[in-house]
Image 1 (tube, rainbow, N blue to C red):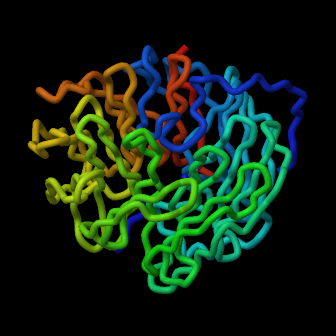
Image 2: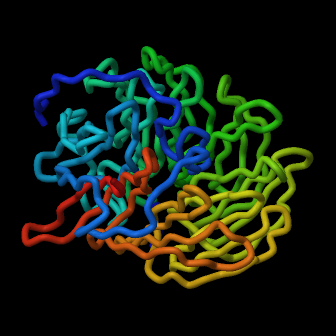
Length: 418
């Protein structure tokens, strides 16, 4: 089976500071590499009983990772019974839920067509510092909605269709802001399959790049290559690069399987990009972003939903089956591997030379970004399930998780660290 990889206003009399340089405004952070800012720190030990600044119950269910702008945290959620999809806004300092703004009523796909590892609110919120953008699958299409920072809707557009026929597992990709455009990816076995760019100010479509009419789930990666931003994407049996300003294809190279979920990683030193997956075949590979775009190395490790992490010329990942690897970016040489155990969907995160990786069972492993050997630093449990990737800021990790209760399952957002 294909495995996937993001109500009424409450009291909200608050002011919003300007977006800060260290804000985490979208999937994989300000530089698109899942690195915390230089000088950032985060704890290595915590539990539900200690080490948390706050721990807030969340309504509904979703897998989107926390997006942070100024003093606000933005998440999405969905209520199966009420058939709603919503934007959540929390206070960054206290964790107080400030607003739950309904984005859609009705139009959700049937539960039988949603993979167990997916939700009706999986794409991560994106922001340009002035607005926030939610992306939901609704009425067989990906709908992009813009809000101001207080959660008031500015515009809503049907970005692109998504109505797969062969496999029905829900939607997987997150919106990505590049300049004055929001990039949305929708790959499926239909004639709308493609990547589109909408204007951040008014939602007008700026361009569309056609993609193969086959199912895949990856979000585009932002990579600065030879002084300009490129959009990199894997899946549908190819690796490709697009110009974010025009949607023109820069290059493409065959080499992957059909479906991938992870976002590609990029190493500026070697100018290699990396992808992993997938379905039906498994792989991890390195491709040249210049020259002939050759596949430099390839192996049979599989990181399907989770994205990989580049640190100082080395590539780190945790596979679906819970094995951590470190390879040389340029050579592909295996430096070490270590079994952590459990399944993984959350992506590894770098903070202060440490890698944080959270399993689907809610265990966050902390180990050194050390290519010489695996060096465990911590192992921490929150709840019994986690799919979102933690967000690092202020010496804290903002971590979405859930646990089973007598009434079913309760989600939380925790601020790890004082």
